Amino acid sequence: MGKWVNSLWKGYENALKGQREIVSSMQVVTFIAIKDLDNIRVLANRLEIEIESLLQNADFALKEEDAVKLVVDEIKKKLSVFMETIEDLSEHADKCSRDIRRARTVILQRIIKHPSN
Image (cartoon, rainbow, N blue to C red; front, side, top):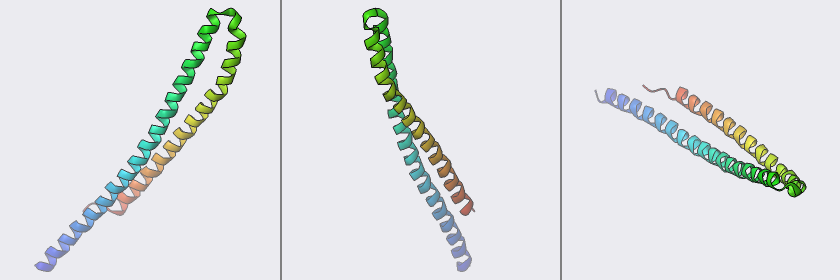
């Protein structure tokens, strides 16, 4: 009877260890995803600031006809920063998407490796 109980206990213990590994992996993956999304949020905020600045320049140009050339030059300068921010945002979004897909695969592999009893 003792061997049977020990074998049951060992089975439960192994299942619990497998589940702990899965949860631990999920925590790491979640942390990485949150960091990636935070980077995207920062870039999106920067993009919002750039758009607002461009709109303010456009408003100024509409009010002051003499300043149109100066405003157009300023918009051209800010356009390069704007495009760089768009590229950074796109790269971070792609990285986040890849990381999430990779993490999902790792978690699924661990779940398959340690099926619950």
